[in-house]
Image 1 (cartoon, one colour):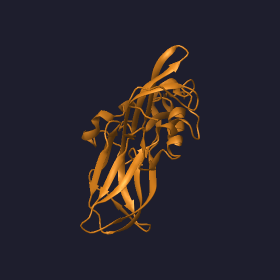
Image 2 (cartoon, rainbow, N blue to C red):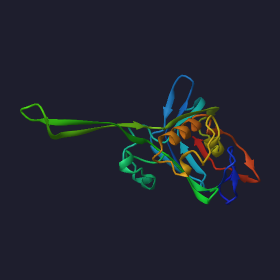
Image 3 (cartoon, rainbow, N blue to C red):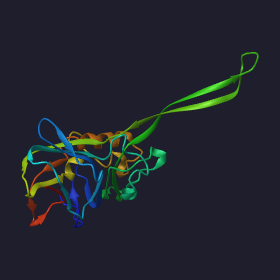
Image 4 (cartoon, helix red, strand yellow):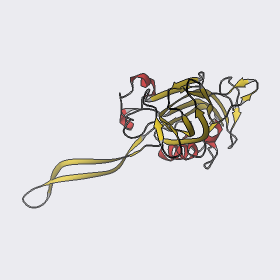
Length: 244
């Protein structure tokens, strides 16, 4: 599925969808040897959109490597408002927990009433899970006004750890190019949770925990893959990683 030419797409639930924006971030990029992993320290976070093939270039020790790993989004320690000014356009509202969007996949879907927004936004959702009231009491033991209201929150982080098997050798004084990492946009909407816009948040899901949980579960089921393919004589969206 392509999202750059305005072509309507029919998803697995038979919703008609047109995508016009894909923004997402990855972090904590590492390459593994089978026994250990080497982490890429800078930059800490990578912003990727639908119009750009990002070329990532790093220097690593000579040797045989067996996989590429990264976090889709940000973990609990990194997902702090203001930590990454370079991705300020991905901010997550403070009243929902702050931090950053992991993904903005935006477009339109056709409902029985006409076009409606299709905004699949994924991030860390904060919800109220309990409210406790402390009371003041008079000398007779009767309640005499509220002393304090305590609110308990839970935060659901929804980031994904992605590991893609890929054997390659970094040689001295040579350039090693790794095949692209591709996001399979269709997978967000089909497995294991069939995504029907008539049910799943009606297209706007940022306040809907069930919809966001379902999206994250689908994302954990093979949303990224390593491949080097061209469809329709045009390259897919991808991030190319180069090691020196």
